[in-house]
Amino acid sequence: MNAAAVDLAIAVKRLPHAADLPLPAYATEQAAGMDLLAAVTADVVLAPMGRAIVPTGIAIALPPGWEAQIRPRSGLAAKNGVTVANAPGTIDADYRGEVGVILINLGPDPFTITRGMRVAQMVLGRCGRAVFHEVDALPDSARGAGGFGSTGLKG
Image (cartoon, rainbow, N blue to C red):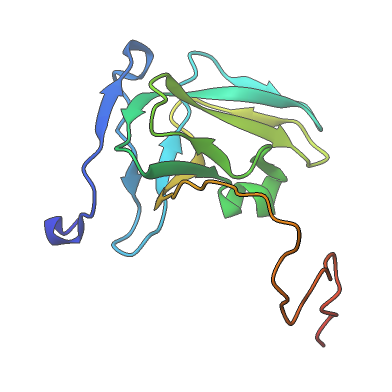
């Protein structure tokens, strides 16, 4: 990867059960997400509708104002029906534990997770903090209170 393209340096701790696995990395120069690998010590079989927290073998220290989102891999979802159950999962800047991926098998067949398998992707993003202040009325907008399909379908 081109060093000039780096926007953020993140401290990462490789945990003992991932000593032989590579750290998260971008698969291509313009990829938005880094692949996360399964640091399982034995195969994990997800039955249809089954779920499991898959360890990645890493812990990270994000700077304040940043988050890491854990997202599904499109290939696993399209080919096998396996996705991230809480997509996107959020890693907060103050979390220092192991990054885990909650996978669920929405497909009709059992799915086996093997050591080193790419199970999810991690996308970094800035996140702001808000303070709510209660008001009696909100300002008007063109959309108003319309939601859940109120803008219609195209096509």
